[in-house]
Image (cartoon, rainbow, N blue to C red; front, side):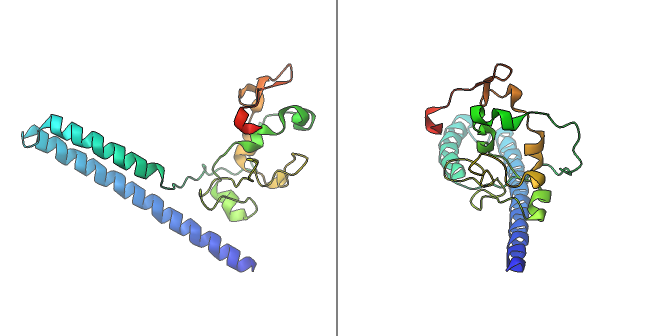
Length: 184
């Protein structure tokens, strides 16, 4: 069964890599279209005002379509085990106050995370950290601790909540940020 999971992971990575290449090609095609439009305008073959009106209608239509489409992001490749000068925060002492709110923040995983096969990602949002229905990371346990602490992603290792107003109103005075109504 483990082999099937590895095959699935490798297959999905391939599909998503192909998707990213397709996106790059689409960007190149868009540049060509813009160049063509500029040339038509320069030659007086297209009316600029009509073009602008049509573009606004098309932009609205395509904007709606784009928001409904999934996209793929992968974090920068760094060796998470070689990171140095990590923030030193006494999380255990602050958990009763902050409720591990940092574990509700979304982020992209790295290829290292994907290759290790330990960190779970959201199939509907490749390669974002998977979250439970309550918004917390799936690796966050009932005591708000991390079940994968030794293998946690680089973003978790380097994250410094001290200045993050989503987490702390005042870190030094141990005053957590107000909880938004949708977080209760």
